[in-house]
Image (cartoon, rainbow, N blue to C red; front, side):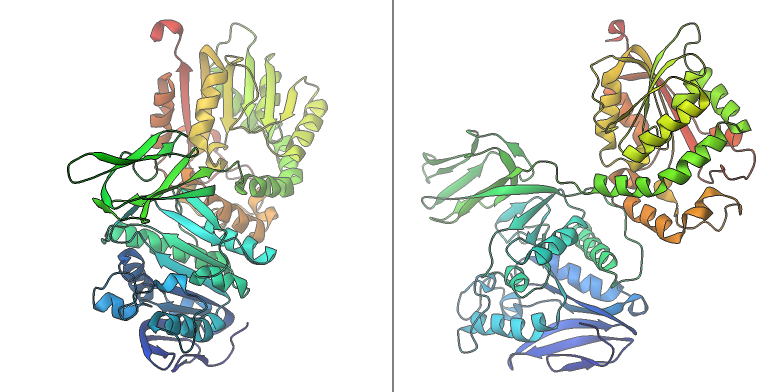
Length: 568
């Protein structure tokens, strides 16, 4: 629904370009603290709520901070922030159930106009808040007795397009896990999805407490989602996680009231048959043992000493197979660039830059014998071809089929024999100790799981083999800004849209939030790479001219050797 005029919600009207804060009256009786940002430009409406459970403080404080930090001039559409839905329960410190009726608000949607207090509130939320929303974000945390690992729910029981958009919203959250809810009614965000509103619920924090880093992280998640939806005109922040899908969630409840002693922590991976905790009586006698019914990761558990009969003890779910959409997006991006990439590498092979690259590499690898070399993320095959010309047995792998096609064409044009295969750089399908050298150029910053990739490269290296990684701290710069590049630079021919797509992909990769190359050196050291050389001056030796090949981001080189048997 496009918003071009005055925006009204409850008893409040807001003009285009206005940021309003105060109390919104809904249902004729509930006055809820709110901030409404109604942008000058028309667009979609995003509803953000917190405090549906009144003792889940992280979401409440995060919504307050968001209302202060979001800038009205960056809003395209409308953002409605309801900072505290179950206000009376919060102010009376009555827990996360209704103050008058003791009902859990997040179990009674869609509510009843003539029902109990929480049923009336749920009805008002649906009729006066959800009815105005195109997207919905609900902020929660663990209750006063709950410990949890950060994760996000997305609505999983709705029309296919609503579920898909809900999942994409969840993917923007900087949390380790996401869960597709299989409930269609009762909860606010679940019910909203049945109305056609893509919806998610973010969980972070717990035990009746909040910390600034938790509220800040939740606020960052919401801002990233708003940017993704195009409602907030800004760049998404970098992140540490890309949520893994968790399915077959198991909720285990206590058979009797007693003292609860968990033996695991939220975020721990558990195996079927493991003891997760025990319930004891006041004499210290074990009355119940909680066993893991399946493999999984613990999402949340009771953190208080007390559990009650039929009350929750622990919840965990199975980490699903790879449903990470980032690699598909990355492959699509490089497919679009593959033609121009081949042409650029074709010219680079016959430029002065090729000789400089050759000198940098040859001084760091053995020169007295023919080597087996793996070029990971080979693109159009520049390194593979360059080193094949030196007489080495070279293999290039890349995830993008069109890149491999062009690499083969380029190798044939250059009259050299190389092997090229479509293969994931994070999972090279070669036996242990297959190569004398593993080399890469401008690859690691594009990898969703760079630490795993380093471990695999180490695995396929022979003992005493050499690792050469040329990369830059691309996370510290905005690649969509081409203003400092020469007119004939390749990035000018790609187009603004493609460069912005590159920037968006980059911000979903955890490596680009790291301090590099310090992070790389630490990770490689743990794999067993020895005698590491870190060269920060390589850009000055390579890029002496500002031409089409010029790289404005300072390259670094990490060169190391796989420890021989006697080193262990």
